[in-house]
Amino acid sequence: MEDQKDTTKLLHHKRVEPCKFFIRAGIYLKEILQRKINNSIDESLWIGGLARLDFQSGQEICATVYCSNMVSLHKTSIDKSNMFYVKQYDKILTPVLKKDITKGVFKAYDVEVNCDNKGLGDIEIDIFGVGWIGFYSHEVRNAKTKFTLYLPQEVGFNIREALMNFDDKKLPVARRHLKHRDE
Image (tube, rainbow, N blue to C red; front, top):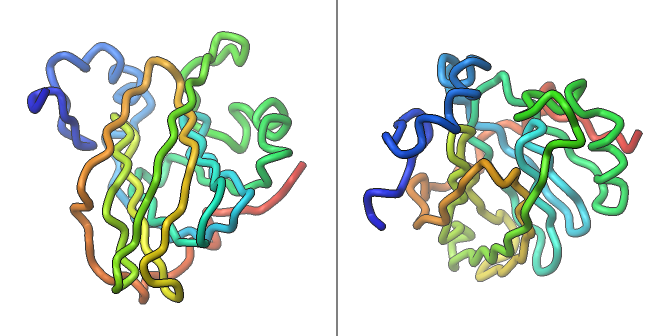
């Protein structure tokens, strides 16, 4: 299974076919940016129209999303997240995998993040072809948080040990890229 692991911008020969979309969309051609997101329980984070991360339970921790600037980030409440997806598909939520919203089938995966006594998360979520998400907590030490990750069935992911395990308290919050709107 070791040869199945993937890192953003490094294409594995067995995943070239699903990644053709990301190459056409220009995601691989853009610089990877880090965007810090302050999360609350019962909120969803949309990563374009390609992934959704629901914060289910536990302590509030922050996420740093590493992806192309072409991938939009958007927070909304969990109860309004599905309606937001239908209304903003291929508008605010870009890029999308398929132009026809009825053809996208999402699968749900449970993820648990543990922060150590310095507040650094133990794992990262690597979404193939899109980017990865790291976790940390400024205020709560030894925090545990449960998430639900939703991905189109064509998009794979990997839970890996945190590679970017550093204290990023000085990262600016991505205000210009992130809008909190429940429309």
